[in-house]
Each structure stands twice: as C-alpha cells, then as structure tokens.
Image (cartoon, rainbow, N blue to C red; front, side, top):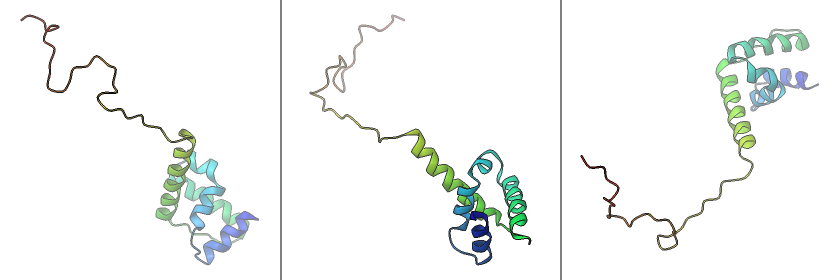
Length: 109
C-alpha cells in the first residue's frame, strides 16, 4: 500500500514525497550510495506501478541527508548535556589566579 502511495505522490509531484521514500527504504538507503539507492528504488517502484518512475537525484540526496542528520542526533544523545558553570571563588582547584605564573617547576637551562 505504501509503495502505491509513493508512486501516486511522485506522479502528482507532492511535497514531502522524498522524505516518505527515505522513510520507506531506510535500511537500503543508509548502506548504499545515493545513485545506487536511486536505481534500486526506481526498479522497485516500477514493479508496483507497471510504468517507468523517475526520481530526482538531488531531491533524494537532500532527503537522505535530512534523515541521517535527524536520526543520528536523536540516537546518540538522549538528553541534552548539562553545563556546570562556576565562578572563580567557587573553584577549589590549585590553579593560580590569572596573570600569575609558577616558576618553581621550571627546568634549568
């Protein structure tokens, strides 16, 4: 059913059809180059439609990039990173104040 919808939307040049294609063929698109995936999808859709189907390379490449960018960022980082800022008086490290240098550890030349 979904492949028939893809063919119908491609023929009517509907917006968002390439995102729909990428969602449908996500497993094969992520492993293949865009050109190879384009040929694979065209062949598969031609079997369903019975006519030739033309897919634009650049539109498919953009949709694939959006898909990879969206999925990659959601899977890697589940919650946003929390930053912990401290003022200089809250720091407990043994660093010197700005502008001061420790020359006692300097090697003699």
